[in-house]
Image 1 (cartoon, rainbow, N blue to C red):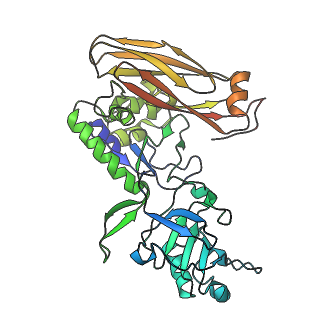
Image 2 (image 1 turned 60 degrees about the vertical axis):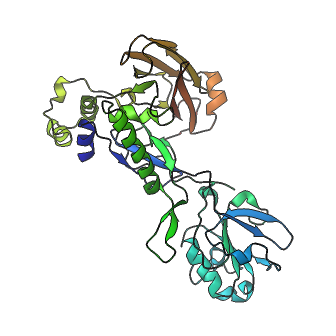
Image 3 (image 1 turned 180 degrees about the vertical axis):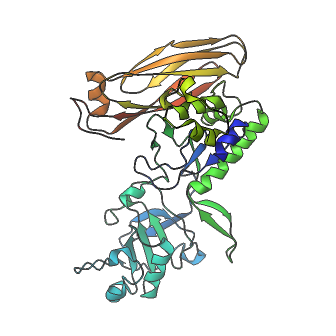
Length: 406
């Protein structure tokens, strides 16, 4: 409720969506008025190379970077500490290596990361039983996300597909997905959230952190800068600015605070329940509610059955007074857009367009098949600007499709 009141007063409210991916529908803090910030990896790494006896090298990450290990003269044998009695020793969690101490001692130990403890604790277990180094292997669900940690022995975190023995996949800290409200696509944006270096209250004085709690402050700061540059813009108008020229996007999508009241009325809440959220007098019986898919959100989230889906959006010109926009759509389902071009003649002029999504046999065969989702984008382009809106399509059951749910 406090976050909605912030938006009503034209202040940006942001939140992290949690780190429960990569499954669908796991985004938290998904209220429409919140800037929901997911996490992405970055183009910097704390490189750590694992070199095997046979000369093969596999690049991972680690904060354990002693100078003496740059060119080791001898290489320990590599061992995968699995046993026939299924003690889960291959995961190197606390207490799991005791029965394979002879196998581990003096070796470089390959550990799987599934569940259990942090990589540092696994390394401590390896060191406890005489292991001299560790390679921590990602699980498939972890995808391309690997952690740089302050290990207690030479160790590197590797992508699963990088090796034959070590058997490359990747997990971001969220999956952009249809949340509990299938007409809305969340999170709104992603920001740097993988192995972010920062000061730390310890002897090391620095460490790295990962997750949406790290990425959210980055994008919240950016939102504050945008708001200071454009104090008349609403929090919603700021959302589509990120993937474009942030301070000069050309066009924006805006939602008025009263639109959220109409949206809440659509859930059949009692007037007093809506008033408790909005802190305004409400009479839903005298208002026409707005379905979530029809809110002027800068993205599209469509669930396909057998009927076409029609949505409208309104854009506001905040760029050049005189500007022409054409549309570019990337999506393997049938889509009709009216109009296909927008002409502005003054600042703050608005234009509304309608998008019809439908699934013909050709579109189905190209994109749906047995997939749960398809994705694409709709981009308005002028000589100076380009604003892109992501599209997510969920395929629902009909006579051509298996039962698929978001």
